Image (cartoon, rainbow, N blue to C red; front, side, top):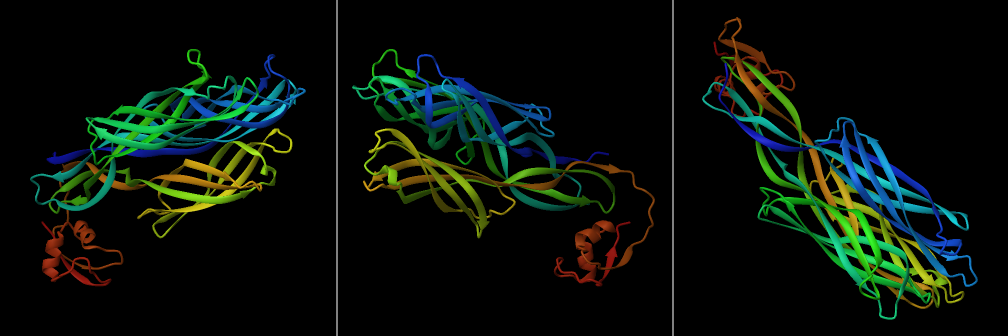
Length: 509
Protein backbone atom coordinates (compact mmCIF):
# COMPACT_ATOMS: atom_id res chain seq x y z
CA UNK A 1 0.00 0.00 0.00
CA UNK A 2 1.36 3.41 -0.96
CA UNK A 3 1.39 6.48 1.25
CA UNK A 4 0.80 10.00 -0.06
CA UNK A 5 4.07 11.90 0.30
CA UNK A 6 5.46 15.29 -0.59
CA UNK A 7 8.85 15.06 -2.28
CA UNK A 8 11.57 17.59 -3.00
CA UNK A 9 14.37 17.65 -5.57
CA UNK A 10 17.82 18.79 -4.51
CA UNK A 11 20.87 19.34 -6.72
CA UNK A 12 23.81 18.08 -4.69
CA UNK A 13 27.43 18.93 -5.45
CA UNK A 14 29.27 15.94 -3.97
CA UNK A 15 33.04 15.52 -3.85
CA UNK A 16 33.89 12.21 -5.51
CA UNK A 17 37.64 12.42 -5.12
CA UNK A 18 40.70 14.63 -4.69
CA UNK A 19 44.22 14.31 -6.01
CA UNK A 20 47.45 16.25 -5.64
CA UNK A 21 49.93 15.39 -8.35
CA UNK A 22 53.26 16.61 -9.65
CA UNK A 23 53.88 16.80 -13.39
CA UNK A 24 57.38 16.78 -14.86
CA UNK A 25 57.42 18.08 -18.44
CA UNK A 26 60.84 17.82 -20.10
CA UNK A 27 62.34 18.39 -23.52
CA UNK A 28 65.45 19.49 -25.43
CA UNK A 29 65.62 22.76 -27.33
CA UNK A 30 67.93 23.44 -30.26
CA UNK A 31 69.28 26.99 -30.60
CA UNK A 32 68.15 28.27 -34.03
CA UNK A 33 70.91 28.79 -36.60
CA UNK A 34 70.20 32.51 -36.77
CA UNK A 35 71.08 32.91 -33.06
CA UNK A 36 74.52 32.71 -31.42
CA UNK A 37 75.64 29.86 -29.16
CA UNK A 38 74.53 29.85 -25.55
CA UNK A 39 77.18 30.51 -22.90
CA UNK A 40 74.99 30.67 -19.77
CA UNK A 41 71.35 31.23 -18.87
CA UNK A 42 70.24 34.43 -17.15
CA UNK A 43 66.55 33.76 -16.54
CA UNK A 44 63.98 31.12 -17.45
CA UNK A 45 60.24 31.52 -16.89
CA UNK A 46 57.03 30.14 -18.30
CA UNK A 47 53.24 30.03 -18.43
CA UNK A 48 51.18 26.84 -18.15
CA UNK A 49 48.48 26.40 -20.80
CA UNK A 50 45.86 23.68 -20.41
CA UNK A 51 44.69 22.49 -23.82
CA UNK A 52 42.19 19.89 -22.66
CA UNK A 53 40.87 18.24 -19.48
CA UNK A 54 38.89 15.00 -19.55
CA UNK A 55 37.11 12.98 -16.89
CA UNK A 56 37.11 9.32 -17.88
CA UNK A 57 35.88 6.18 -16.15
CA UNK A 58 38.20 5.92 -13.17
CA UNK A 59 40.76 8.37 -14.60
CA UNK A 60 41.52 12.03 -15.24
CA UNK A 61 43.48 13.12 -18.31
CA UNK A 62 45.13 16.53 -18.66
CA UNK A 63 46.86 17.76 -21.83
CA UNK A 64 48.82 20.98 -21.76
CA UNK A 65 52.04 22.78 -22.42
CA UNK A 66 54.43 25.23 -20.83
CA UNK A 67 55.31 28.32 -22.85
CA UNK A 68 58.96 28.78 -21.87
CA UNK A 69 61.09 31.89 -22.38
CA UNK A 70 64.86 31.55 -21.94
CA UNK A 71 67.06 34.62 -21.56
CA UNK A 72 70.69 33.76 -22.13
CA UNK A 73 74.17 35.20 -22.45
CA UNK A 74 75.53 34.59 -25.92
CA UNK A 75 78.93 33.07 -26.57
CA UNK A 76 80.11 35.92 -28.79
CA UNK A 77 82.59 38.80 -28.64
CA UNK A 78 80.18 41.22 -27.00
CA UNK A 79 78.48 38.70 -24.62
CA UNK A 80 75.11 39.94 -25.85
CA UNK A 81 71.79 38.99 -24.28
CA UNK A 82 69.55 36.84 -26.46
CA UNK A 83 66.36 34.88 -26.01
CA UNK A 84 64.61 31.76 -27.25
CA UNK A 85 60.99 30.66 -26.86
CA UNK A 86 59.70 27.08 -26.88
CA UNK A 87 56.72 24.99 -25.77
CA UNK A 88 57.13 21.88 -23.62
CA UNK A 89 54.00 19.74 -24.01
CA UNK A 90 52.78 17.22 -21.45
CA UNK A 91 50.05 14.66 -20.84
CA UNK A 92 49.12 13.43 -17.38
CA UNK A 93 46.74 10.58 -16.55
CA UNK A 94 45.62 10.42 -12.91
CA UNK A 95 43.73 7.52 -11.32
CA UNK A 96 40.44 8.70 -9.80
CA UNK A 97 38.19 5.99 -8.39
CA UNK A 98 34.45 6.32 -9.20
CA UNK A 99 34.94 9.16 -11.69
CA UNK A 100 32.97 9.18 -14.95
CA UNK A 101 32.49 11.57 -17.93
CA UNK A 102 29.27 13.06 -16.47
CA UNK A 103 31.13 14.70 -13.59
CA UNK A 104 32.80 18.09 -13.19
CA UNK A 105 36.34 19.00 -12.27
CA UNK A 106 38.07 21.89 -10.54
CA UNK A 107 41.83 22.24 -10.86
CA UNK A 108 44.48 24.53 -9.42
CA UNK A 109 47.68 24.43 -11.46
CA UNK A 110 50.94 26.11 -10.48
CA UNK A 111 54.29 26.16 -12.21
CA UNK A 112 56.71 25.29 -9.41
CA UNK A 113 60.01 25.87 -11.16
CA UNK A 114 61.90 25.49 -14.44
CA UNK A 115 65.39 24.02 -14.75
CA UNK A 116 67.47 24.89 -17.79
CA UNK A 117 70.59 22.77 -18.37
CA UNK A 118 73.06 23.56 -21.13
CA UNK A 119 73.99 20.37 -23.01
CA UNK A 120 76.25 22.14 -25.49
CA UNK A 121 76.45 25.52 -27.18
CA UNK A 122 73.53 24.69 -29.49
CA UNK A 123 71.33 22.61 -27.24
CA UNK A 124 69.65 22.98 -23.83
CA UNK A 125 67.43 20.72 -21.75
CA UNK A 126 64.26 22.19 -20.19
CA UNK A 127 62.64 20.52 -17.18
CA UNK A 128 59.43 22.01 -15.80
CA UNK A 129 57.89 21.09 -12.45
CA UNK A 130 54.12 21.59 -12.19
CA UNK A 131 51.88 21.11 -9.16
CA UNK A 132 48.25 20.25 -9.81
CA UNK A 133 45.41 20.01 -7.29
CA UNK A 134 42.26 18.34 -8.64
CA UNK A 135 38.78 17.96 -7.14
CA UNK A 136 36.11 15.92 -8.97
CA UNK A 137 32.43 16.67 -8.27
CA UNK A 138 29.26 14.78 -9.01
CA UNK A 139 26.28 17.05 -9.63
CA UNK A 140 23.33 14.80 -8.79
CA UNK A 141 19.62 15.48 -8.46
CA UNK A 142 18.38 13.78 -5.28
CA UNK A 143 14.67 13.22 -4.62
CA UNK A 144 13.61 12.73 -1.02
CA UNK A 145 10.42 12.77 1.09
CA UNK A 146 9.97 16.00 3.03
CA UNK A 147 6.43 15.41 4.38
CA UNK A 148 3.57 12.89 4.60
CA UNK A 149 -0.08 13.67 3.90
CA UNK A 150 -3.25 12.28 5.53
CA UNK A 151 -1.47 9.90 7.91
CA UNK A 152 -1.93 11.33 11.39
CA UNK A 153 -0.85 8.11 13.10
CA UNK A 154 2.67 8.25 11.57
CA UNK A 155 5.16 9.66 14.04
CA UNK A 156 7.81 11.87 12.41
CA UNK A 157 11.13 13.09 13.79
CA UNK A 158 12.18 16.16 11.79
CA UNK A 159 15.45 18.03 11.59
CA UNK A 160 16.60 20.97 9.50
CA UNK A 161 19.86 21.93 7.81
CA UNK A 162 21.03 24.94 5.83
CA UNK A 163 23.08 23.78 2.86
CA UNK A 164 24.63 25.22 -0.28
CA UNK A 165 22.65 23.76 -3.15
CA UNK A 166 24.14 23.83 -6.64
CA UNK A 167 22.14 26.03 -9.03
CA UNK A 168 24.24 25.19 -12.06
CA UNK A 169 27.63 24.98 -13.75
CA UNK A 170 28.71 26.82 -16.89
CA UNK A 171 31.83 27.29 -19.02
CA UNK A 172 32.71 29.92 -21.59
CA UNK A 173 35.83 30.81 -23.56
CA UNK A 174 37.03 34.37 -24.09
CA UNK A 175 39.97 35.96 -25.87
CA UNK A 176 42.06 38.75 -24.38
CA UNK A 177 43.49 40.58 -27.39
CA UNK A 178 45.38 43.82 -27.67
CA UNK A 179 48.21 45.65 -29.34
CA UNK A 180 50.84 46.66 -26.79
CA UNK A 181 52.68 49.83 -27.75
CA UNK A 182 56.41 50.26 -27.23
CA UNK A 183 58.32 53.53 -27.25
CA UNK A 184 58.74 55.08 -30.71
CA UNK A 185 62.49 54.57 -30.54
CA UNK A 186 62.13 50.82 -29.94
CA UNK A 187 62.22 48.26 -32.69
CA UNK A 188 61.56 44.76 -31.40
CA UNK A 189 64.33 42.22 -31.87
CA UNK A 190 63.34 39.47 -29.41
CA UNK A 191 60.92 38.81 -26.57
CA UNK A 192 63.00 37.71 -23.58
CA UNK A 193 60.46 37.18 -20.80
CA UNK A 194 56.65 37.10 -20.38
CA UNK A 195 54.53 37.00 -17.23
CA UNK A 196 50.72 36.83 -17.22
CA UNK A 197 48.51 37.37 -14.15
CA UNK A 198 44.73 37.63 -13.88
CA UNK A 199 43.62 39.95 -11.06
CA UNK A 200 40.67 42.11 -9.93
CA UNK A 201 38.14 39.31 -10.40
CA UNK A 202 34.47 40.32 -10.08
CA UNK A 203 31.08 38.74 -10.84
CA UNK A 204 27.63 40.17 -11.47
CA UNK A 205 24.35 38.35 -12.10
CA UNK A 206 21.48 39.44 -14.33
CA UNK A 207 18.95 37.96 -16.77
CA UNK A 208 19.98 34.33 -16.24
CA UNK A 209 23.63 35.12 -16.88
CA UNK A 210 26.77 35.55 -14.82
CA UNK A 211 29.11 38.32 -15.91
CA UNK A 212 32.73 37.53 -15.04
CA UNK A 213 35.13 40.49 -15.15
CA UNK A 214 38.85 40.69 -14.47
CA UNK A 215 42.10 42.22 -15.70
CA UNK A 216 44.98 40.39 -17.31
CA UNK A 217 48.29 42.02 -16.38
CA UNK A 218 51.08 41.47 -18.91
CA UNK A 219 54.70 42.04 -17.91
CA UNK A 220 57.14 41.73 -20.79
CA UNK A 221 60.92 42.14 -21.20
CA UNK A 222 62.19 42.58 -24.75
CA UNK A 223 65.38 43.28 -26.67
CA UNK A 224 65.54 46.09 -29.21
CA UNK A 225 67.44 45.86 -32.48
CA UNK A 226 70.14 48.12 -31.02
CA UNK A 227 70.64 45.74 -28.03
CA UNK A 228 68.74 47.68 -25.37
CA UNK A 229 66.75 45.73 -22.76
CA UNK A 230 63.34 47.25 -22.09
CA UNK A 231 60.30 46.43 -19.96
CA UNK A 232 56.66 46.78 -20.98
CA UNK A 233 53.65 46.58 -18.63
CA UNK A 234 50.16 46.30 -20.05
CA UNK A 235 46.66 45.61 -18.70
CA UNK A 236 43.88 44.02 -20.74
CA UNK A 237 40.26 43.79 -19.53
CA UNK A 238 38.76 40.29 -19.59
CA UNK A 239 34.99 39.79 -19.69
CA UNK A 240 32.76 36.81 -20.33
CA UNK A 241 29.10 35.84 -19.94
CA UNK A 242 28.16 32.42 -18.60
CA UNK A 243 24.57 31.25 -19.16
CA UNK A 244 23.04 30.27 -15.83
CA UNK A 245 19.23 29.80 -15.58
CA UNK A 246 17.72 30.59 -12.15
CA UNK A 247 20.73 32.62 -10.95
CA UNK A 248 19.84 35.49 -8.60
CA UNK A 249 21.53 38.38 -6.82
CA UNK A 250 21.74 36.23 -3.67
CA UNK A 251 23.59 33.42 -5.44
CA UNK A 252 27.22 32.68 -4.63
CA UNK A 253 29.28 32.58 -7.82
CA UNK A 254 32.51 30.61 -7.75
CA UNK A 255 34.51 31.62 -10.85
CA UNK A 256 37.89 30.27 -11.98
CA UNK A 257 40.12 31.27 -14.91
CA UNK A 258 42.42 29.00 -16.87
CA UNK A 259 44.80 29.95 -19.68
CA UNK A 260 44.46 27.62 -22.66
CA UNK A 261 46.71 29.22 -25.26
CA UNK A 262 48.76 32.36 -25.80
CA UNK A 263 50.26 34.12 -28.80
CA UNK A 264 52.77 36.99 -28.87
CA UNK A 265 54.32 38.41 -32.03
CA UNK A 266 55.43 41.71 -33.56
CA UNK A 267 52.49 43.64 -34.95
CA UNK A 268 52.72 43.47 -38.73
CA UNK A 269 50.47 46.50 -39.23
CA UNK A 270 51.50 48.98 -36.56
CA UNK A 271 55.17 49.78 -35.91
CA UNK A 272 56.75 49.70 -32.46
CA UNK A 273 54.09 47.36 -31.09
CA UNK A 274 53.49 43.75 -30.05
CA UNK A 275 50.27 41.82 -30.65
CA UNK A 276 49.04 39.55 -27.84
CA UNK A 277 46.17 37.06 -27.87
CA UNK A 278 45.35 34.81 -24.91
CA UNK A 279 42.59 32.21 -24.89
CA UNK A 280 41.01 31.93 -21.43
CA UNK A 281 38.45 29.42 -20.17
CA UNK A 282 36.09 30.76 -17.49
CA UNK A 283 34.27 28.20 -15.32
CA UNK A 284 31.42 29.27 -13.06
CA UNK A 285 29.68 27.25 -10.32
CA UNK A 286 26.65 28.94 -8.75
CA UNK A 287 25.27 28.02 -5.32
CA UNK A 288 22.30 29.16 -3.23
CA UNK A 289 21.59 28.86 0.47
CA UNK A 290 18.73 26.47 1.06
CA UNK A 291 17.03 25.34 4.26
CA UNK A 292 16.05 21.69 4.18
CA UNK A 293 13.37 20.17 6.39
CA UNK A 294 14.43 16.55 6.60
CA UNK A 295 12.60 13.54 7.99
CA UNK A 296 15.24 12.07 10.25
CA UNK A 297 13.16 9.07 11.38
CA UNK A 298 9.55 7.87 11.39
CA UNK A 299 7.34 4.97 12.42
CA UNK A 300 3.68 4.12 12.93
CA UNK A 301 2.19 2.77 16.18
CA UNK A 302 -0.49 0.94 14.19
CA UNK A 303 1.19 -0.11 10.92
CA UNK A 304 4.36 -1.82 9.79
CA UNK A 305 6.27 0.57 7.53
CA UNK A 306 8.79 -0.23 4.82
CA UNK A 307 11.24 2.69 4.96
CA UNK A 308 13.99 3.29 2.38
CA UNK A 309 16.75 5.67 3.48
CA UNK A 310 20.06 6.78 2.00
CA UNK A 311 22.99 8.94 2.99
CA UNK A 312 23.87 11.96 0.86
CA UNK A 313 26.84 14.30 1.15
CA UNK A 314 26.00 18.00 0.89
CA UNK A 315 27.97 21.23 0.98
CA UNK A 316 27.58 23.65 3.86
CA UNK A 317 28.96 27.02 5.00
CA UNK A 318 30.41 27.89 1.59
CA UNK A 319 31.96 31.34 1.42
CA UNK A 320 34.53 33.20 -0.64
CA UNK A 321 36.62 35.58 1.45
CA UNK A 322 39.18 38.24 0.55
CA UNK A 323 41.91 39.79 2.62
CA UNK A 324 44.05 42.59 1.21
CA UNK A 325 47.47 42.91 2.82
CA UNK A 326 50.26 45.41 2.22
CA UNK A 327 53.90 44.52 2.86
CA UNK A 328 56.89 46.81 3.09
CA UNK A 329 60.30 45.17 3.24
CA UNK A 330 63.88 46.32 2.82
CA UNK A 331 65.90 44.03 0.56
CA UNK A 332 69.68 44.25 0.77
CA UNK A 333 71.59 42.99 -2.29
CA UNK A 334 75.11 44.49 -2.38
CA UNK A 335 75.48 43.70 -6.09
CA UNK A 336 72.68 46.16 -6.89
CA UNK A 337 74.71 49.18 -5.79
CA UNK A 338 74.92 51.64 -8.72
CA UNK A 339 73.05 49.12 -10.86
CA UNK A 340 69.92 49.54 -12.97
CA UNK A 341 66.87 47.31 -12.32
CA UNK A 342 65.34 46.15 -15.59
CA UNK A 343 62.55 43.91 -14.31
CA UNK A 344 61.14 42.37 -11.15
CA UNK A 345 58.90 39.37 -10.58
CA UNK A 346 57.17 38.21 -7.39
CA UNK A 347 55.97 34.63 -6.88
CA UNK A 348 53.83 34.12 -3.74
CA UNK A 349 53.78 30.77 -1.96
CA UNK A 350 51.81 29.53 1.05
CA UNK A 351 54.03 27.46 3.33
CA UNK A 352 51.56 26.67 6.11
CA UNK A 353 47.97 27.39 7.13
CA UNK A 354 46.34 26.92 10.54
CA UNK A 355 42.82 27.47 11.83
CA UNK A 356 42.44 29.06 15.24
CA UNK A 357 39.59 31.00 16.90
CA UNK A 358 37.57 31.46 13.70
CA UNK A 359 40.65 32.64 11.81
CA UNK A 360 42.76 31.12 9.06
CA UNK A 361 46.40 31.97 9.72
CA UNK A 362 48.67 31.88 6.68
CA UNK A 363 52.45 31.75 6.71
CA UNK A 364 54.14 32.16 3.37
CA UNK A 365 56.93 33.71 1.41
CA UNK A 366 57.39 35.95 -1.60
CA UNK A 367 60.10 34.87 -4.01
CA UNK A 368 61.42 38.12 -5.50
CA UNK A 369 63.40 37.89 -8.76
CA UNK A 370 65.26 41.02 -9.84
CA UNK A 371 66.85 41.42 -13.26
CA UNK A 372 69.44 44.19 -13.30
CA UNK A 373 72.32 45.59 -15.30
CA UNK A 374 75.42 45.64 -13.13
CA UNK A 375 77.12 49.00 -12.66
CA UNK A 376 80.48 47.23 -12.54
CA UNK A 377 80.33 44.83 -15.48
CA UNK A 378 77.49 46.41 -17.49
CA UNK A 379 76.06 42.92 -17.88
CA UNK A 380 72.56 41.62 -17.19
CA UNK A 381 72.22 39.46 -14.11
CA UNK A 382 69.52 37.95 -11.87
CA UNK A 383 69.23 37.90 -8.09
CA UNK A 384 66.57 36.11 -6.04
CA UNK A 385 65.47 37.11 -2.55
CA UNK A 386 62.83 35.61 -0.26
CA UNK A 387 60.49 37.75 1.85
CA UNK A 388 58.46 35.94 4.57
CA UNK A 389 54.92 37.09 5.26
CA UNK A 390 51.93 36.14 7.38
CA UNK A 391 48.30 37.21 7.34
CA UNK A 392 45.00 36.31 9.01
CA UNK A 393 41.61 35.78 7.44
CA UNK A 394 38.48 36.07 9.59
CA UNK A 395 36.36 32.99 8.90
CA UNK A 396 33.60 32.22 11.45
CA UNK A 397 32.87 28.51 11.62
CA UNK A 398 36.10 27.36 9.98
CA UNK A 399 37.46 24.08 11.35
CA UNK A 400 39.91 21.33 10.53
CA UNK A 401 37.11 19.67 8.51
CA UNK A 402 36.75 22.69 6.20
CA UNK A 403 37.83 22.50 2.57
CA UNK A 404 40.05 25.54 1.94
CA UNK A 405 41.39 26.55 -1.49
CA UNK A 406 43.50 29.71 -1.40
CA UNK A 407 44.88 31.87 -4.19
CA UNK A 408 47.17 34.89 -3.77
CA UNK A 409 47.14 37.77 -6.23
CA UNK A 410 49.90 40.37 -6.47
CA UNK A 411 47.81 43.45 -7.23
CA UNK A 412 50.60 46.08 -7.12
CA UNK A 413 54.36 46.09 -6.59
CA UNK A 414 56.81 48.94 -6.33
CA UNK A 415 60.59 48.90 -5.79
CA UNK A 416 62.48 51.99 -4.66
CA UNK A 417 66.27 51.91 -5.02
CA UNK A 418 68.33 53.53 -2.26
CA UNK A 419 71.61 53.45 -4.20
CA UNK A 420 73.49 51.56 -1.49
CA UNK A 421 72.51 48.11 -2.65
CA UNK A 422 69.20 48.16 -0.79
CA UNK A 423 65.66 48.26 -2.17
CA UNK A 424 62.42 49.09 -0.43
CA UNK A 425 59.75 46.71 -1.70
CA UNK A 426 56.07 47.70 -1.38
CA UNK A 427 53.74 44.86 -2.31
CA UNK A 428 49.94 44.61 -2.15
CA UNK A 429 48.54 41.10 -1.82
CA UNK A 430 44.97 39.91 -2.20
CA UNK A 431 44.41 36.58 -0.42
CA UNK A 432 41.31 34.84 -1.81
CA UNK A 433 40.00 31.77 0.01
CA UNK A 434 37.19 29.48 -1.11
CA UNK A 435 35.93 27.74 2.04
CA UNK A 436 33.28 25.06 2.57
CA UNK A 437 32.67 21.82 4.38
CA UNK A 438 30.92 18.61 3.44
CA UNK A 439 28.42 16.95 5.78
CA UNK A 440 26.53 13.69 5.48
CA UNK A 441 22.77 13.61 6.06
CA UNK A 442 20.26 10.76 5.93
CA UNK A 443 17.05 11.20 3.96
CA UNK A 444 13.95 9.05 3.38
CA UNK A 445 13.44 8.42 -0.34
CA UNK A 446 10.64 5.83 -0.29
CA UNK A 447 7.88 4.69 2.09
CA UNK A 448 5.19 2.00 2.00
CA UNK A 449 2.89 0.06 4.41
CA UNK A 450 3.46 -3.66 4.93
CA UNK A 451 0.94 -6.20 6.15
CA UNK A 452 0.75 -6.35 9.95
CA UNK A 453 2.36 -9.39 11.51
CA UNK A 454 0.90 -11.30 14.47
CA UNK A 455 2.17 -9.68 17.64
CA UNK A 456 1.75 -10.11 21.35
CA UNK A 457 -1.25 -8.02 22.32
CA UNK A 458 -0.76 -5.97 25.42
CA UNK A 459 -1.83 -2.48 26.34
CA UNK A 460 1.03 -1.29 28.53
CA UNK A 461 4.68 -2.08 29.17
CA UNK A 462 6.90 -1.28 32.12
CA UNK A 463 10.31 -0.12 30.97
CA UNK A 464 13.45 1.05 32.78
CA UNK A 465 15.51 3.74 31.05
CA UNK A 466 18.93 2.62 29.78
CA UNK A 467 21.99 4.75 28.94
CA UNK A 468 21.53 6.53 25.59
CA UNK A 469 17.74 6.18 25.56
CA UNK A 470 15.53 8.97 24.23
CA UNK A 471 11.75 9.16 24.37
CA UNK A 472 11.69 8.91 20.57
CA UNK A 473 13.64 5.64 20.56
CA UNK A 474 11.52 4.17 23.38
CA UNK A 475 8.24 5.19 21.71
CA UNK A 476 9.37 3.77 18.37
CA UNK A 477 10.54 0.50 19.96
CA UNK A 478 7.18 -0.20 21.60
CA UNK A 479 4.98 1.43 18.93
CA UNK A 480 3.77 4.11 21.25
CA UNK A 481 3.98 7.91 21.00
CA UNK A 482 5.99 10.54 22.87
CA UNK A 483 2.80 12.36 23.84
CA UNK A 484 1.28 9.19 25.28
CA UNK A 485 4.39 8.36 27.35
CA UNK A 486 4.79 11.88 28.74
CA UNK A 487 1.09 12.05 29.60
CA UNK A 488 0.95 8.71 31.45
CA UNK A 489 4.21 9.32 33.34
CA UNK A 490 3.73 13.03 34.07
CA UNK A 491 6.96 14.00 32.25
CA UNK A 492 7.30 17.77 31.78
CA UNK A 493 10.60 17.85 29.90
CA UNK A 494 10.86 15.09 27.31
CA UNK A 495 14.60 15.70 26.92
CA UNK A 496 15.36 14.82 30.55
CA UNK A 497 15.44 11.12 31.38
CA UNK A 498 17.35 9.38 34.17
CA UNK A 499 19.04 6.01 33.78
CA UNK A 500 16.97 3.44 35.69
CA UNK A 501 13.84 5.62 35.61
CA UNK A 502 10.64 3.54 35.47
CA UNK A 503 8.28 4.33 32.61
CA UNK A 504 4.81 3.03 31.77
CA UNK A 505 4.57 2.66 27.99
CA UNK A 506 1.04 2.68 26.57
CA UNK A 507 0.92 0.54 23.43
CA UNK A 508 -1.52 0.97 20.55
CA UNK A 509 -3.31 -2.35 19.99
